[in-house]
Length: 226
Figure 1 (cartoon, rainbow, N blue to C red):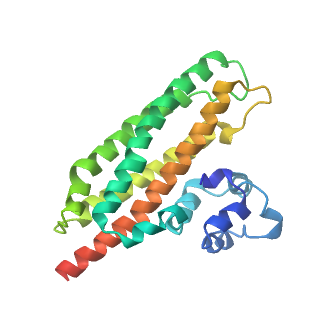
Figure 2 (tube, helix red, strand yellow):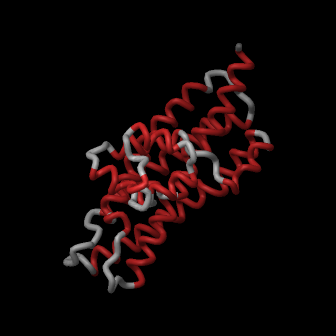
Figure 3 (tube, rainbow, N blue to C red):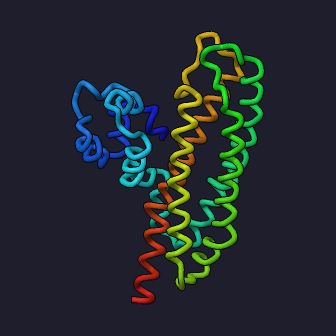
């Protein structure tokens, strides 16, 4: 899900443990339930990236991916490659085409996502580099059950995931949290539909790695060398 764009109530449905995070910041009140998370954070002058990171940390694996808990790490890696790595590459290529078109045609409009194309270029370079390192270094180690020095690349990837959360926040801000003018053209609507899909997928991608695959891989390492 695109956590920042959803209401407090919707986030609580998807992430039950989010109640502890929201309570810590005094946000978990009935009057706040229908408001988007990003708006609540802004109103309360809270650091959005910090809160987003805390919510990601307690976000469960999606219902569709629960079955992965019954398979070995090699199959989880294959799933990540097929369902996230390949998909992100397609998504970013399409997003860049659409954003260039929208920024060019609607440059004078107030809600035009100025700077989105440039930032998407950065996200593409950053994410492709990150995924390449996983594909060439970390994932082969996990698939081969090579537990020696596994913690180091996992920690590096976790840190880069924090950078991706910064990118998610920036993408939402540049697109005005996917707010469209009433007369938005088809390209603009498709841009924001795909952008929301990309943010949701990237979020779940991070959750599946941080909160499941990496945890399980580290546990195996500790057992092997404990």
